[in-house]
Structures are given as C-alpha cells and as structure tokens.
Image (cartoon, rainbow, N blue to C red):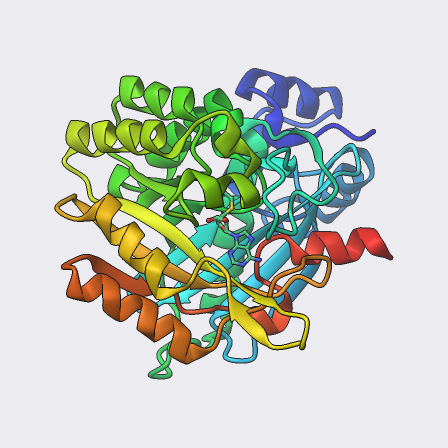
Length: 366
Ligand code: SAH
C-alpha cells in the first residue's frame, strides 16, 4: 500500500523527500499542494517532472481518491464517490448555492443505525472515518472549485462564474457523526483553523445520540445542530428509526434544547416526508398526514427551531414512496399556521443519485 503524504507530519514529509535525494524545501512545496487538495502529483507544476513521476510511483496525495465524479444537469451540484486505502467507499457532495459553496461530508463508511428509509445503512457499518479522511472530502471539493475558477465555469443561476471557496459544511453524508464524535470534532476544529470556516457555518446532523449531543455541549463550539426527527411520536419513530428504542423523543429533544440554549442557536429539525403504497398500489401518507403535522407542532411550538421538510428521495430497496407536492405543502401549512418556521428542502442532484448514499450503494451492487 502506498503511503498517504497528507497524513505525514512536516518532519515525516521532509524525511520522505530527503530519502528520495531531494532538497528539504520540496517538502514545503508538496505540503502547499496537499493543502489545496491536489488529487495527484502530476498537477504540482513547480516540481520537476521526473520528481512528479517518481512521487506518483511511490505515494498518493490524499486519504481519499476520486473514483467517480457526477455533475447535475443544472451544474450546481457535483457528487463524488471516493475510495480509501482499504477499499472502502464514501460519498461527498459539493453544492454551489446563492449563499456560498456547501459541502456535505460522510463521517463513517456505511452506517449502523438501520433507519428504514435510508440507503446508507443497507450494507451496515464498515468503519469510522479518521479526522483526515473527513477533512480530505473538503479538500476534494476545494480542488473542484479551483477547476471552476480556472475554467470560468458558469454555475450560478444568474450565470456568474463561481469564484468562491468552500464556505459551509454539513455533516449529513453517510454515517452517524455522533458515533464517531472525537474524529468529527477533530475534523471541525481543523476546518475552522486551517480553512477559516466559521463555527456557525458548520452543521452536525444526528439521528439522536443523546450522549453525543451532550459531548458537543461540553465541547462548547457554537456550531449548528440538526436532529433527524422524522416522526413526532415514539410509537411511529420506533417503527422507522431503531435508535429510538434506545433514546426516546423527549430525551433527544431535551438534549437538543440544551444545546440551543447553550449557544443561542436555532435547532434544525429534519423531517422526511414519507408515503407508502397501499394494496391498490396508491401512495398513502405515512408520517406526513395532517395529524402528524399537528403532533409535530405540539412538540415544537414556542421553541427556537426551524423545520426542514425533506420529500423522501426514492431508494429502490426501501418500501416507501415519495409524497405528492400537494401533501408536502399541506403538511407545511399546518406547521406555519402553528407559528413554526418551516422550509421545504430543495432537492439537489437527484438526477445524479446525489441523495443519501445511493451512489455508494449502486456501485457496491455491481
Ligand atoms: N446519521 C445522521 C446524518 C446522516 S443522514 C442523521 O441521521 O442525521 C442525513 C439526513 O438524510 C438525515 O436526516 C436522514 O434521515 C436523511 N435521509 C436518509 N435517507 C434519505 C432519503 N432516502 N431521502 C431523504 N432524506 C434521507
């Protein structure tokens, strides 16, 4: 297995280049390229060509290598399937939005949570990602934005070229971040320190691991917390999210409100809208009925939160259906009438399987 130079300390990198008969300053040049997300050594144009070839034969740059890159038709979303040294695969998504460039990263290869609507958990948990493996996903996106700049790629709806850097991070890719809390914290600290991404532009999304939320409160950084709620009663949540057998709704929300109180941050509530096929083959609402909207409002009314309604992205292996646009709006209207901030999440990149672990799953099926 080739060594991953990004994981080397400065001292180790110097040793590596001097062992190749190179002057020490090459280590610094290489480090600069690594920090920009260079996918290989051929792009390091200030190194002699022979050295670049030599490096390519002996080492790799980052802990993740691009296996597949898919672009949505509107040009706003790029999805990466990434491979790691042990053959495990993860996904990350770059979303070019009007407020900035947001990257959705994975925190684990696979997932152990077993949510009934999700593709990422179908093959179980393979392993936790290291802080470097999470960070490298940001670097892959950063390099992609560099390509945008070099090609003057018009990506914004108004046709502007994208001249930005990564500005927002959401830890909402494959895996449960609060089952890998220390590495996730290490990653966030680093993104803040090395890339200047503000705490308030970083969001951790959890299915509700209460001790993990408590760890985040203790850690004390004012990041955003998102809770994947998806059901307003324990009875319903038990059916679709096995974690609810361990941490009940009231415990999860109590921890989440403590988090928002500690940082004066608005809590993000994620609520997937699920339908199901009945015997006649028609789609009926599952957790998206008006009754459940009322129950959700009962839980949240008067609280500092924003509900993100997410029409379910279809996964072949899963026994649900996407609700109609009308049903989604009806659900939202009830929440609005009860005074609850609500947004319907815009679907990005569904044409490239950008939704929730589908690329990795489809690749594994082949
Ligand atoms: N484990 C964490 C983060 C990863 S999942 C969590 O549960 O929050 C990120 C979000 O995508 C969660 O809200 C999850 O429930 C949702 N999700 C999973 N599969 C989905 C699908 N097929 N369509 C829409 N959202 C999905």
